[in-house]
Amino acid sequence: MPQNLPNEILEMVTNRLNIFDKIRLRRVSKRLRSVVVLDKNSYCNVDVLVADSQIILKLHGRLGGIVLTYRKCEDGTLIERSLGGGDKLIRGTNFIDVAQADIKSLISSKTTIHHLEVDQSMDDPEKIAHFWRSFCNWNVSKLKTFANNGFQVNAVLKVVQPTVLTDMKLEFVRSSTHTNAFSISQFVKSEQWKQLKMFKGRPRIRKSNLQHLLHLKKIDVISEVEREDVVRFCLGLSNSNVLESTVLRFTERLPVPGLVAAFRKTNTNIGRPSWKKILRIPIGEHLATLIKLTNNAAIVMRKLATDQDEKVIIEKIEKLSSI
Image (cartoon, rainbow, N blue to C red):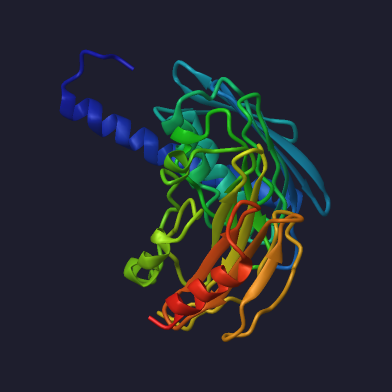
């Protein structure tokens, strides 16, 4: 396209090209959808490879499969398909945006992503975050990410800021359709842990309801809570690279949180405590996590081998729960 045109004409032509590309992209997606049979009663499996210069999407549907490759080029994004038709050039658009738009139109809410690989060349935190945002609200049952920078995911509903993910392994735990949580599977300083923020989109429980938990011993972080979301209270062992943790699910009874189930890092259901009893979660021979529900928050304390007798901790919890 000539670059010496008046700005108004250049902008008009560019806009028309972008509109044309979007229409063409929808048509391509519609044809691809018929190939892999993505309807309300079916699903497809997806493999995704993400790098700075290309994104490869493999779809395996009920009646076959297809491979899409999005390549970055000077004029825009080149889309190569393994079934039907020639290459498509989407002009004037970032190739990540194009891939996101096409993937979003192809993948239904029942889609299972079997493998997602983010290449180490994706070293730009903003670029990684931009790609991940498109996955935020999808029904992803199993998703594993492998990269040389130690980024590993088991299931994804929410995205955290990637600026603190260097040399860390991020693990999402999915216990049901509406309960999700995250933890770091290697030792992280509490200052780094506090930098992790879940993207918010629904009503929150007031942070003041959880404020007094910040003063409890050995609790690394307290997160704000959303409706039907899970908060993982990180219980890190100072002499180990493994983080033990407890997942608390808060129900619709806002602003009163209800502890529906507690999970270890292995996602094993270890108990359904009542509102008045203290739940004891053994971590080791001399370690344990003690949890009690109150009308305003879940009181969580951790007993270390060097701590005082467990009865003293229980007394502290009872005292806090009466406030």
